[in-house]
Image 1 (cartoon, rainbow, N blue to C red):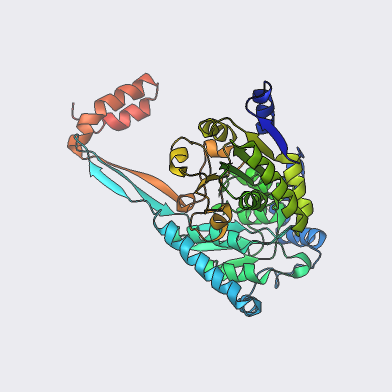
Image 2: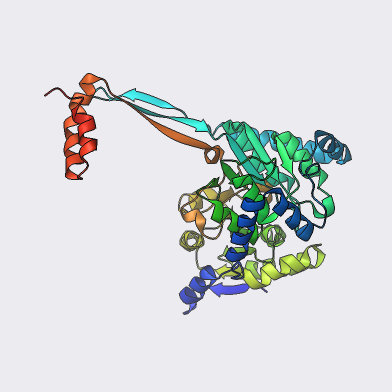
Length: 430
């Protein structure tokens, strides 16, 4: 059973704080291993990729099979179920339309001193996408990571994905085609991140790397940050559901397990003001676990990392939500807007009893790459802005520099930077 907490109990604050602070990653330090992998890829390029691929994926990587060919992509598409492809098309179009609305505007204006100011947005030249191939393959993640990049205007998008025994998921390749990915490579793990960041053999370096992965992939992204930009260092998946007693317990149980089945380190939390409802949800979770093909994974996440929190009033929920800062937040109540206005920290919020988190994972439109491990306190979900950068624009004519220059030169003098001061004063008429 999941942890049960009650806000009326004397030890609630201490127990809740301990729950929030719990390390769900297992505490394994993989930084030294990853550092060695990155160093080998930088030093030996394709040689290192071949060695690691043979070791971890069990097939012989060569210069000729490193990159997936257009013919292989076409064959993969032919192997997919037509209904699956239609669903993929539906999702891709919704994701594209949503992200097109995120394109920021350039601004240019002249202020009261006659200075031209503004900014412009431009896309990075190349982005790398990591698509995992471990416990499950996620064509939806390919769409969610690649489509914002293409909408932003990225001209080159390269995807790395592991191919155990040389095999690749056909629907992942079909998703890559629909997302406009230009290059697909059969490599995974920290070595793939290193190849995207620094280049290896025919793989040219990119400017930004995005996409989920295991602890080694996450650590590799952390270590190459600075050489390239990254979306985030993602942790285990999370869902928090606030529900009163009017929701269907079977619905809420399914929502909680939708994240628990991702990984044993995932977390599901229910906050409710109805003890009887909490009991019914717990019972429904146990029933659904018995029928779930991924029971071992989901049960571990539910038992070891999850919680049911009983509160006296729904008014107490927002403060708890903000402390947890969940990746996904469902508001399964009569008036979700009222609660939404009181919550500050969540990666994505789902309004009402008929908006399950799984809709957001696939077809709603907003990106499902979201901040985890309380990062929603300061971070946002993936968007076109992750593939763009803002350049400031400043322009002065003779009159404008005459108005701004004296103050700039005085500040340069105060900081002990004479060349700074002189570069302004040579333009001023004494």
